[in-house]
Image (cartoon, rainbow, N blue to C red):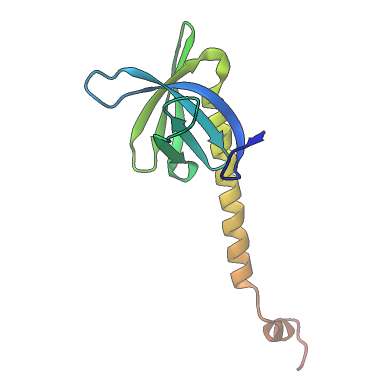
Length: 136
């Protein structure tokens, strides 16, 4: 894994095609960088200007729609139910990489939440002594 300027580890990078939201719904090539926390979509491989940064926090699911010829079509569904259609060459496995990154992200967040909940429920040292039956 490589590191990008923000310090996030790059899981995968390369070209994905995204269907535009306009009436014609044309496929536009985007240079994508998948990290542990987000999917960055750039207009070109120079990564000079970011067109979209999709946080894994805001992705609900990745649905594989169809495989035809050389392309694999999939949809990223966000937490606000917005759908973004993508396609990639079948052997590039972008949908799998995004899905695995999403699972790891959600697991990390669940563990952090559990630990912080556990830490907030820990009794103070005085309360611990009472629970253990020790006198002060």
